[in-house]
Image 1 (tube, rainbow, N blue to C red):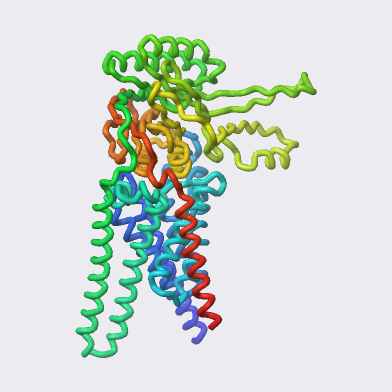
Image 2 (tube, rainbow, N blue to C red; image 1 turned 60 degrees about the vertical axis):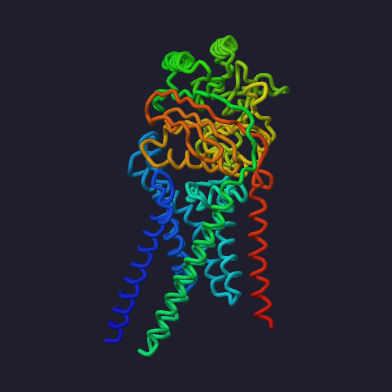
Length: 547
């Protein structure tokens, strides 16, 4: 009989925990709805509030770990669902392989939340001054976002601060603190709201022992609501005050045209298709100059030319001459390769290094080589180790090589310079702010075709909008099949093209000079402050434990 009771109790306990983890998972799913194309920021706030609440009420480290893992799994399961689209629709991977691979990828990313939740659980038990606790908890989450952005070349996707891109808070604080500063503000606000509600609920529970304490219950609830309202209103008032502060200055007007060729990804690298692809870009470029003769800059997307630079001298020579005749600049994406020979072994095959480049021709000058390579897409992590371990097997590992981190900006005209960022390099706020500090405009080219009909292109575009806000400089974004856009220095889109269609996107934007405080100090300041807050909390708790 007792054994049956124990089994029944365990079954009930398992059902309760399973339900809680399911709710936490769904809460994680809500997180992604604050990002483009949904932009329901309040859902991200509610999601984060529930996450902190689940950690607070966890009864053990194990429960906190599992809550964090399932929250992260839901977050990335929705937020990076485009990974499945890329693998299945464009990598031609069978669903039986693509789905488990996507789940495995999301599970790996969820491990960051698992580890973060363990630390949050420990800190939530500290007996600290409440605002120091709130600040330290928010700091932990920001530090983990930073770790995720750097480790293994980084994956700075779905950073919580990005969900504020379209709010007055971002316009006010992004030029000062960047995306990680926005993350700190968001997490601190959510912690304040969550803990205020928790404390109010605990006070109500205490007053449940007596019916005479109804007024105390109402007083506790009213106090919680008023505290939250005062905090939120204060945050927005400060944001409204700061949003119009401009740190950069007008430089020169620049009219540009983006060429969206809409080349099918499964047709692009077939050698027989190369002439028609190149002819299409030439045709669209000439058409753009007929329609927009005052356009100074023409931009082709990432790897627009489906051949190596040394194999495309005829095309480049023709376009260079044509652009000079028209008094225009052309920036285009093209892969490159460099052969190196062993001077001591002339019979050995030359080593080939591949690069993802953009070059400026015509009036434009300069070349940029991509620095941040996509893991498993442009390079295999630990490829040297893999090759040595499996030297008895032929593994054709041809990684791209990354460019150095001191590349000069591209010269667009004699008085306008722009720093280039290829594909998901635009996601790295610290890279963009560091490289573009002294340029007049930010350029980015991409090939988002492998995102397919998913939320990926919208998230990618939103990152560019936030980079414009952080640096208060316009961004020109040219893609193969969308979403190509011109973004002003306030992060607003002034011209945009359709997806999955050939298009010419033209617009005039005011280039900028100078730099924002964030461009000056980067993310390092935020990480140092967060580390200081965490260290202070640890020191205060240590003193309390030893006095």
